[in-house]
Image (cartoon, rainbow, N blue to C red; front, top):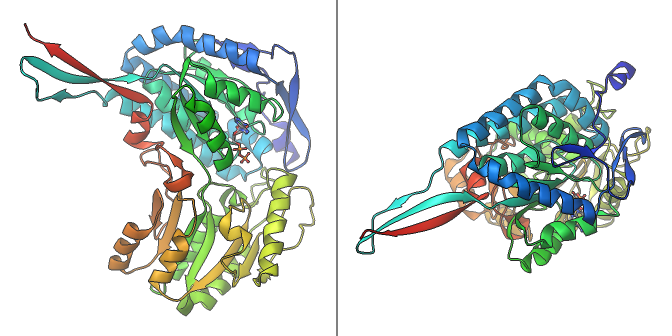
Length: 488
Ligand code: ADP
């Protein structure tokens, strides 16, 4: 383990603006912390409004060249970048684990997933043209071309420090936009490491700019990115509260928005489900990244008929999860991101118990202390428990029984959120009914492995606007221009 720690690759600790590795105007830096040990693993520039100014002008300067470059040439750079990521997957994964905490095999998988967006959008861009429209106006030709917005901004979260960058950057750049990216303050090192590889892949200066800032400077930077008139599109992944704030700030300049916000995913297990698959799926949907994903199962609804058996099998599986340092290959549950996340986890466990839930496994502090918690199972969780109404973002599985399909659907939809949902049933008619009835942007039927660059990722209700990945994700970074051409 110590050997792995020493093998931490040389990390970039300057920000990347206009193709240069720079400090903040203020000269200030802030610390990046390992959530497993509390150790400081690096310092990065603490940027603010003046630095955003530089980044926006660099992105503006780069725009003419970048958008005029052929779509094939842009695609080549993106694919070379993906290749460099795969070549350095291990080093990138170690950096990612050190600043974020997830198990190393999940980090390696994330690097592959992150690279897949670059490949996907390099291809997507070259096949996504405008249209010709059969003329509805006499003596005129009607056609459309698809154009980039221009300068875009992206604000990304800490739970997928690499994939959340490329899921926005790849379609934006493939379409010919230039970007200013503000990574989460907890995980700037992965963003900077990716930028270094982009530079090596030949990305021209100013096309991608990474502005790092501490929590203290983030509101000012966020305000700037959401109000500057030169920035035409803002893409954000994070909490619903900050999404709403950015949306209101962006309204003054009518910015186009993509928002990928909080979820509160229902996980439904019917009496006709394959229980082996359902338990396995729940372990993935609930415990991947220690439950810190926006598509994590949050409300687990199980049919009366299989409730006891499901609870037993689940508890058995959860008891086998290994809590530890993400760099230890045996680990399946790393630390939570910070003390506030641990406090929320503890509060959700306590609140559910106060309201009548039964503790089946875990629930107490982990002997390692710090940001480590014991994966926990609660049964008979009432639907008015706090954890049913807001994401826990931790390894807490709370099960609630239901009697019939109608009740399951009502409970599943009883939330303002609508990102992912999961349902396990072997009855095809029921599966179709659920596909129609569940108010989510994404639905896993008999599977919890739903992420793919080819799939449209996004939410309904208060979980967001727009889709990332897939053809939709490309369209979200372009605007259609209509040309009406008279023939004289
Ligand atoms: P979380 O609670 O999971 O950290 P946030 O929505 O707070 O979720 O964070 C997601 C991203 O939004 C991060 O990059 C964070 O720095 C950024 N962020 C937080 N507050 C603001 C703000 N006021 N304006 C702009 N971005 C913000």
